[in-house]
Length: 109
Length: 115
Image 1: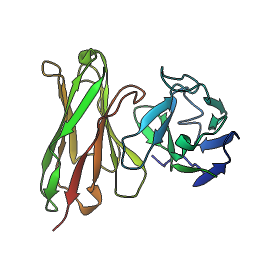
Image 2 (image 1 turned 135 degrees about the vertical axis):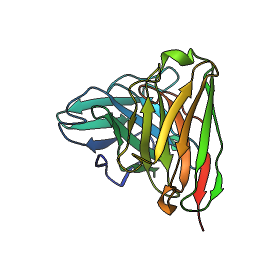
Image 3 (image 1 turned 180 degrees about the vertical axis):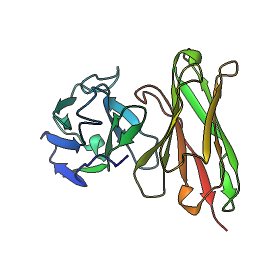
């Protein structure tokens, strides 16, 4: 049950795009289409932004999109806005258990 | 709307026990699996356990297996986690989340394990 690997930080200017990777193995990310992405603001509970790799819950802006290739999933935030500055985590089903990513702090320059 | 409210956190000595509760509303609780996830101060998210919609299919993270027990009472729309043999490293905010994809989260309850 090793954590999924994410870059510690990512940044972009307002209006730009930022992509966060989430690398696992064939036993988790690569083996199932059950990858989710979460946004966590300081002092707040996480909020799901993407689930089942590409699905966006109602209320989440379409600036947020997800994808997967092999053992790596990605979250792209297009048209970056100041309110997107937060910590982002991925998670994956791993066959009877679940695993989270190490987390990425996104900074809007 | 979906609401999840955790309770039961507090300060406890190493080796002692605590029982956390999560009261759910706004959805058909008995149709969904439920997770517990924790976050140590300043650290990332760690999945703890999951329980199937009917109380079957229970799984734990290796770090808590044999010490924590997840359960649910569908008549009361509540999921529980019993924390036994607590260690300093179990100090964290504990969240419950609606399964299967953690679609909704509670506000969390803080458990502090300290002598």
